[in-house]
Amino acid sequence: MSELRMMHDVPVMVWLAEGAPIATEQDALDVIGNAGYQGARWVAVPAGRFAPDFFVLRTRLAGAVIQKFVQYGLGLAVVGDITDHIAQSTALRDFVRECNRGTQTWFLTDLAELEERLK
Image 1 (cartoon, rainbow, N blue to C red):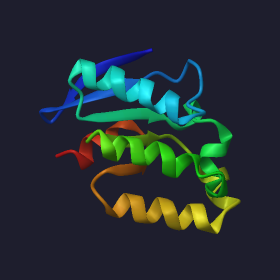
Image 2: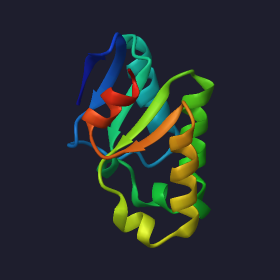
Image 3: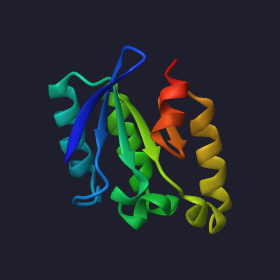
Image 4: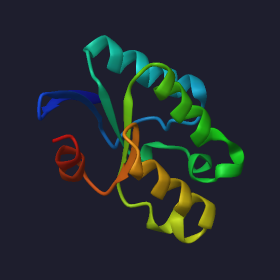
């Protein structure tokens, strides 16, 4: 399901690729609760664990999920290849670019990239 790793003294809850998708705000709250209980400051979730609606901005699922992470003070890293999703949506491409400029939500290709950003 998940494991807690230290990346440059930052506790990161890394979710495995296998498992139920994050398809609702409640699913996000379950992830947040687990991460908080383990003492994580960041959560790394494989892109494939998100329901397809997460990558369709008009569904507002991404905004709702990210807002929950903000409210609970946890960073969120969406890890994996999302080029197909980005190719289908200029809005998503812009959203990802803006998130990656910030310090709370990042869309990254792999855990090595997350570890580098947490330096």
